Image (tube, rainbow, N blue to C red; front, side, top):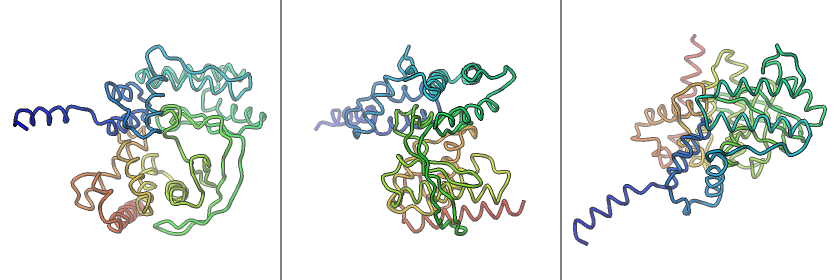
Length: 333
């Protein structure tokens, strides 16, 4: 092949967007509640080579958040469906107009107040427990509050309790796990990514809450690492350290994931790499960036991508060292 032709082919290949990288970039933007950036990442990209799940999600996002798009109306007259319609409207507009996020939250407050017939002085912090109580009377459990950049609403109808034993890098914990199922809403992350990403659970100071449909099995490594390890680290830290910021909790829990992951290491790292940010108000994205930077420095690697192929023992040991170093700093405060 003539040199000029080879050079042209190389330049063309370099200019062609990589579908997988663009999809990963779109997922990261969506999980930072910014569908403008997410759609920009997907623009002009031939996505046909993506795995089926990713192709379905990308196609859905392009349609769901297209110009002049509207969220779905309430599916029924039940309180749960009417509340979800209000939250979907809020999520939708706040995601396609990130600059209006604060104003959209005030509109959400007014509409939830009207839905509940609550007094004018009630703000969202007061309204959301009221909504939870009202949903419980319908037989539904719910999670409200702020998750990262947006107000959350998850709704489910089935809940079972199970004790579990968890070994963390800094000790063993016995925990109460509530197994949640039959979901009506998986929350704003699920909505933002058309189901491709969403929370697998959360922790309080008393228990762990597992989103059962997120896992293929409660016995496999993904559940043990991404849920049990991560969330038990949260529970332990909330008891041990009383003043941790949200991103600090996530930083420590993500180190625990890397300390425990073996077969799922590539998947864990892919999740961290695709969702990075510089805003502590988006704690997962911010913690991902901090964890990856510290791991790269600790192991003397050139980039975060090398963590996937580095010696697994060294990766796990480095994560444990970083976690223990962080604990020592906090204990010395």
